[in-house]
Length: 77
Image (cartoon, rainbow, N blue to C red; front, side, top):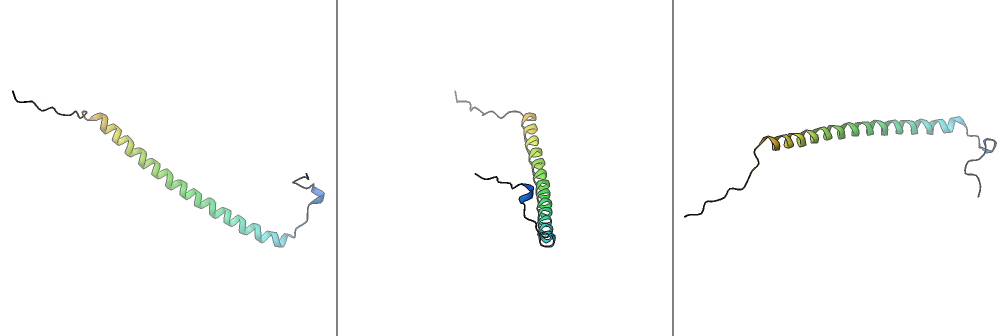
């Protein structure tokens, strides 16, 4: 089985003009994806905070109110 990474002397030389345009486009796409990911992360963090507040509010309300117990009817004598 051959080496997956050729030695430095075996590497092909690419012209900088053809690869520079591809790298710039790739960098721009990567930057756009990074910004999009950061925005989605911020939205998800906001939703987690909202959900946490709802859960905490309901748990606190549940502990502050008297527990509901079923009422028993008095049977006629």
